[in-house]
Length: 101
Image 1 (cartoon, helix red, strand yellow):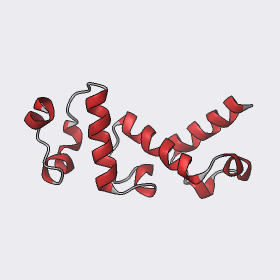
Image 2 (spheres, helix red, strand yellow):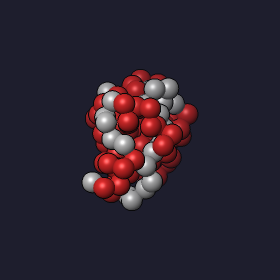
Image 3 (spheres, helix red, strand yellow):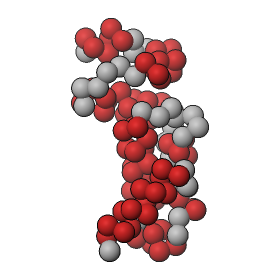
């Protein structure tokens, strides 16, 4: 039963549904805070831009990109060049700084 809930939650996140659009039985089992965490983690794993993704409904832009960089470093992933506009200009993290820290 738990795996079917997890599958519904995964599909909801990938399709871009908000918490309010979830079925009521899922909302009763899944607290909002956990939903926010799952959405943010999923978007970070996929390396999505904050703007235009579901992450923009659950956290601030600054919080999202800081968490993304922290996770990328922990996973030893390459610098997110596709997100360079925000990461370089706002967070002030250049590729050189990313690799040397």
